[in-house]
Image (cartoon, rainbow, N blue to C red; front, side):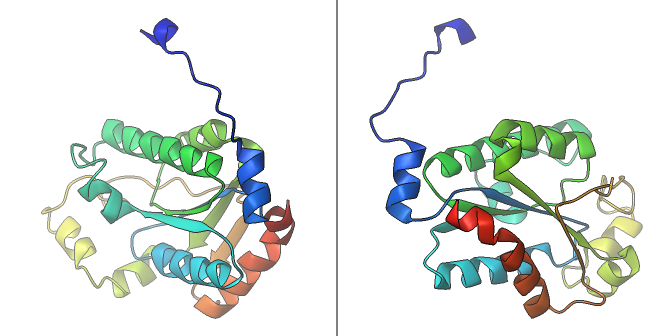
Length: 197
């Protein structure tokens, strides 16, 4: 089947789009436990980038699972496919010249390595939102940890499914000692060269 798939070469390239946008395109991948603050920080970073005139788009776990990936469960196999599809969508958006912000638990190191391979190492910024599970449980506005502990949710990361923390992330945010505003400032500062590039 793959031998019959021949990509078309278009006249407008990613470089052309970046020149039009006047900024580079790359993927900010926020990983961490449920309730760690990934989406909150990603949302605030996107707002800060948008205010700088950067063309952005956010991908979030719950939103993607309601549409594109609504046929997937939380089994290890489906988690892998969930992340693969998101990486491929992000890659298309990078080609469109956007800065993509993706907030996903993405518990497996191998899957995160695959994202990096799909979009390219230079285009991938791994941001580990490092929040202890006790703090995530305390913040649990959706009540997911309680349901997982009661056996109502299976394959819930941190309770009855593993989370493999990044060993060497590009950026690490400890939300127990860092405010959202401080996290945004840290991330934006580290992105300066990529934004102009």
